[in-house]
Length: 543
Image 1 (cartoon, rainbow, N blue to C red):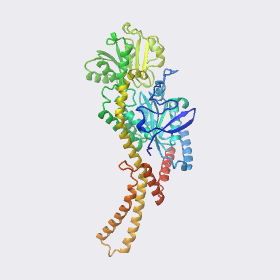
Image 2: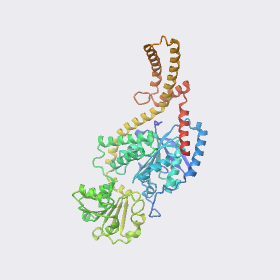
Image 3: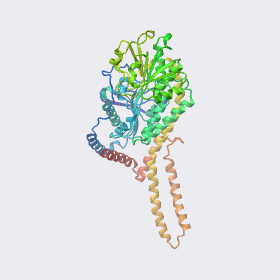
Image 4: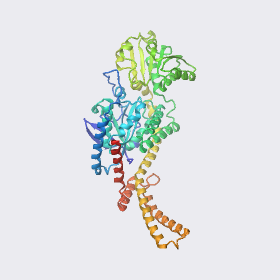
């Protein structure tokens, strides 16, 4: 059930949870989200990056003891089934558990990052948790967010947090300091704002919308993207498109790649920024945008290191106003030796540059101060944190782009307010759809109950008439009469089960009507639905 107001959760200490009703969505700031162990990230608090003790960070989703977890899961679900009455009053909740550039440093985000190729596996593992029925993973350079439908939100969130801790190797107590959790309407609004680019480091950037679309494409290939999550993400895509087409939020908007170029030029001496030797490692979407923005800033020559030449050739054909020189990955270090600025944007899960690699490089040209700039916009990072300790190297990552973004903060806030009305419209549409799902089982059972009575009484009537007097015309007339009586009797009750936002009836009124019909006709739909969900979880855990 989509709640009329969302719920945010904050954590105090190691395991004490407190739930409180959030203020109405209309009063939220565009980027305001409750967080674990800290203020909402719409404020001025900035998370100070912490140095990773290691230069290599790897995500390991392989280590999972399937046999042990399956038996434990089945046992827990059987216990859940025994105590099902405790959950009868609590309906499934949509929740988002995650962290972003607003709440966590890149050192933590890279440990939690899930490569796109592993999204289906992550979704499968999340849906195997006892209290999770649907799941989706949105993992980008700026955020790692898990969207779920939880049979019971409190234990469901704990299970997801434990999963995040296990896959990342970060203790739950440490995760809590950076995680945020949103429920129902707040979770939905957050996703819509993410899709619209309102929650991005760079307001209105377009790449996030493509990433939300990719979640749907990948999720449809797995069994975890159920009807609630699937509809929510599709409506988020609609909201993102509307915001970009009906407001000017995208006009003059910059991307992470363009912000990276701006940052590099800010750090170079103005008199030599045009002549600095540029190297781009990785010719994917991010790398291509870096080249595009370098060309727009007047750069005439760039060296591109990539695994294949075809992608570089395609970029060269598209961008005629800049000289693009291809180098294979085997020449990465030799190309770096003659570069002043190095942009990295590959999907490598391990650093491409470690301290020993950079120490072996000669200093950059004297014109740029002899210090080589590394601008790393990858998560996980392509440049190890230990490179920052090298004397003639200056390392910047996606967290450092805030310096560029803060320059137009007032304009960002004004544009964000323009988009909020569209977000609210799409949110109401989604919540009306989700609320309508609550009454569907009752409608079906009531209709089935009435049809059984009609069929039974019709059969008795036809027997009394007898075959001799029963013509086809008479049979049809009696059948239509019984159907008409049932439809007219059901019209009133079914109208009072509508909750699609087309009338003034509130959700509470509709649910009261539903409960009354369930009691009057002994439909017992809530128990049937819960037992069906539990049975599905038990069978899935045993398979």
